[in-house]
Image 1 (cartoon, rainbow, N blue to C red):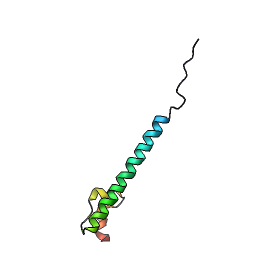
Image 2: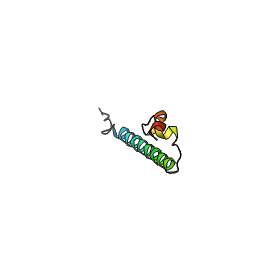
Image 3: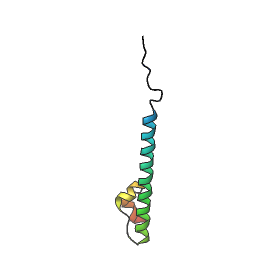
Image 4: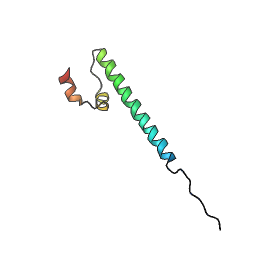
Length: 65
């Protein structure tokens, strides 16, 4: 009688997915920071999306400036 052995590393795919998600999130935050810093350097207001991605409430941003 033969026995079927399950894969020895069932979590390997999940680990790669987590790494991919972490990298995507990291680059999304970096892109938002670049967008916000460029806007501020140009004397403009950063986009609401960039501010939200950085954890800044867009409504309170104008009070800080």
